[in-house]
Image 1 (cartoon, chains in turn orange, green):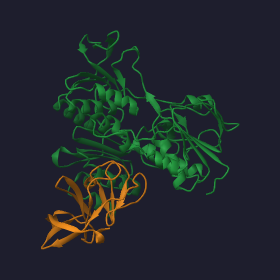
Image 2 (cartoon, chains in turn orange, cyan; image 1 turned 30 degrees about the vertical axis):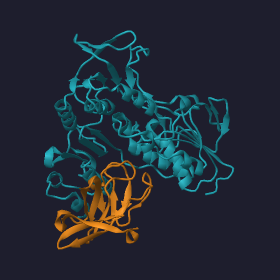
Image 3 (tube, chains in turn brown, blue; image 1 turned 180 degrees about the horizontal axis):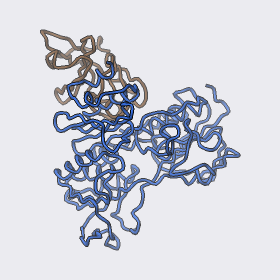
Length: 111
Length: 413
């Protein structure tokens, strides 16, 4: 889990208002793609950007409450902890720590 | 659920059959579980066959439903390459090609289909290929060399996706379609037009409203002759003119069969303790409606899961909405619900040439939606539309057409 991971660096993702409430944005950095979420109450989260089922970009999916639903299949995850919520997805998403600093969303690369 | 002493048999180890097997175990069924397949592979999903697999960016393991270790752990007796030959629904007995006879407590038919053959073409022509299975896709992949002259027969999803993948691999592609527009059976005219424009822009030579006369060549197809007298030379001919459901076993067993194996609202066939799911299953979308089949990923997944629950005695009516998608070049189309009207009730124009077409019923309730956009980006709106369809409240065409009105707000408003 995130608490145990060593933070290697904080990366600037975007301004807070670049992501709508209850929505998701794709963020690419160093050959890796992430999905960065803003919940309805403006908390921020980040997961791997590709669905663990068939590598579809989750940022094209729908955020409802704390669930991201893959745009193609019916795969659903809780984006706060990455938990897969049933078939066809069975592998959890990796999550990353996120913090807000001076109006910017920052994502932690972890080891 | 105990299930000791019982035997559940699944005939057909494709996506639907595989999902049935996995769901039975997830739901706690502990009795004997047999999964019988014609193909030699573990159950897999078919959409990547015409895209990722053909391109070389995905392999079978990436889109299998599970691996061999999982099958062992779940004590699923997978019998590959061993077709079922005879079904006796009175004695509840199934005979396999290897001579074995199995008795069942309940049986599920997910026998899928095979690619429809092009009439009048000798099966001996080694470069006339079809695409339904993993092995057919691999055979096609090996022949999609840069510069190869490919003729595709059929402007439905298989033909269009093969054309797009082959074009991206550097083939010269001509696509022939008998109708006056692409994928006319399932898509609104505006989406057919968008597909046509995209393929032509990408250099696919699409010819609509053409009739095939013959295929020239003795050992290999060398050219396709059209009824208007034109001759199209080819190195490779791919035929995508639909699927024939594998109903032989059901017919032999005396089940009710129309254009597929007919089932009631709980996915049970006309025989006691026999169910059907997936491409081969013919069912009514709504009570009193016409029988129809859904040859989609979504249907295999949803019916597979649902049939498993009912094999365990739940008796739940199947009510999932039909839905499908197709990816071609860098565009994606996606549909949910029924596109029942001649013309859409409203259309919403989105940035970058994307759009959504909405179909309302007489009470202004949303019944179906079709969208078109770059990549998978229409998925978000389609997921919201699915919830609006299920919600069933009356909607205003003006609001649906207005991109400033958020679909999420309409859902919650």
